[in-house]
Length: 557
Image 1 (cartoon, helix red, strand yellow):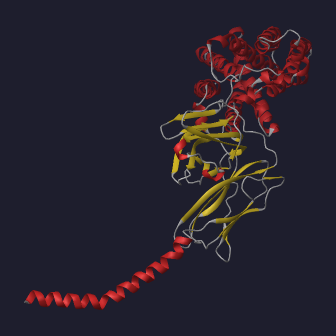
Image 2 (spheres, helix red, strand yellow):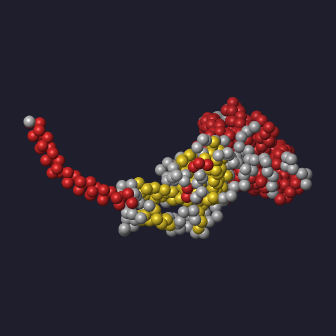
Image 3 (cartoon, helix red, strand yellow):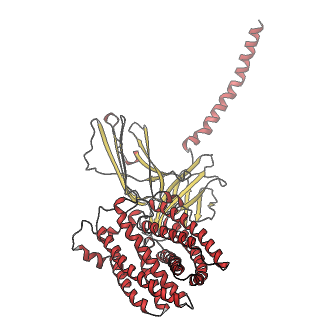
């Protein structure tokens, strides 16, 4: 009986509150309906528009949404071709809270990435990225920029990025050339810099100056012959004339030999100014033939290289002359050591500063040191220079105490100099940057086949090809909007995906598969805005509206 009363009370209570619960459900459904219709804010207008090419820098970037966005969360940034922000200025939100903008400094030619990340008023995160282009920027530089064969119209050689046994003769010629260059120019520079030369110093300048000029001429001929033969391998004899008359490198080799011959006349001249001008001409010529000539701004890269070479010549030439004097007359060696110790320290400082600045100019970041033999050799050279600094400090300490230079320390320093010249002879020939290679991947599966090609796979302009095979029973994605290609930066995961606007095309390749239908898409454009690790994401929407997603990782430099 008591249980029947409780059941009755429950029924009465339920009848009383049921209408209220029903009203609450209806209100919730009504409130939720518009949220379903507009799930989150969508970018309706972008300025500049995605994938546009502009003649001049835009004053700002703007993105307008169909709904209001939060003002205290998210932001917008513009990255350059090295993935660095072009400005530190703060973004602004429009009065209606539907737009976000960022003022820009004047941008130079290049590919720029706009990346935005906001939160809509209903709490949904919205992000994305796209690119725009200013001017007509060249493709990013990689190992191909250092391929001399291109000047001659040759192909099939490629740029050297690694040290091989077959190239030892080539590197030997470069090591000998750099030794002759630094010793001959260094001796001439010291002749002009050194005041009140003793008779012994004059005699040794004349004697060893003649040997270094002879060595410079013979080694230059050997150096030019070895390099010309490597460049002209497999080419007709008639092209040899083209090499020395139509290419910058060939003409510079002729100037090099002419300057080496002129060195005999310069040596006989009693003018230190003429000797220093001859040395400067050789160093400037070598600067135009080095890696620096491939970088912009050219005046800055060449200035760094020439100053670096001059510092190396003063150190190497002075050290070799100090050893000669030490073997000939210890007292004159002591006198010269005073002047050399001061100049050597200045040279080391100059070499360190210009070397660091050149490295930052050549490489996008320091991680590239471990991608090629060039970087490994640079690390070895740096270690050797540290040993030079230690031995140089010990030598300078003896000189400041009034003692004669230590013969053992001099020999160690000269040995280190020889090792550094050998390293320099190798790494000035190979590329400081890795070589990019086209990306191509074909996937075979039971539910799909996919092909993705990115050519030449460099930061900047590329061709993108996507091929999709689906089972005949599923039909094929016959509308462009049903296949999307997205690129995501793995180095910068906070950036939104860049959509590559692929379009259908007629494929002439014979690559059919039984029981599968094929759809092909392609486009061309600078949709890889900066080097690094990337993930290509292919999204396929079948005619039954089932989504297939496949990802492939690749990288470029």
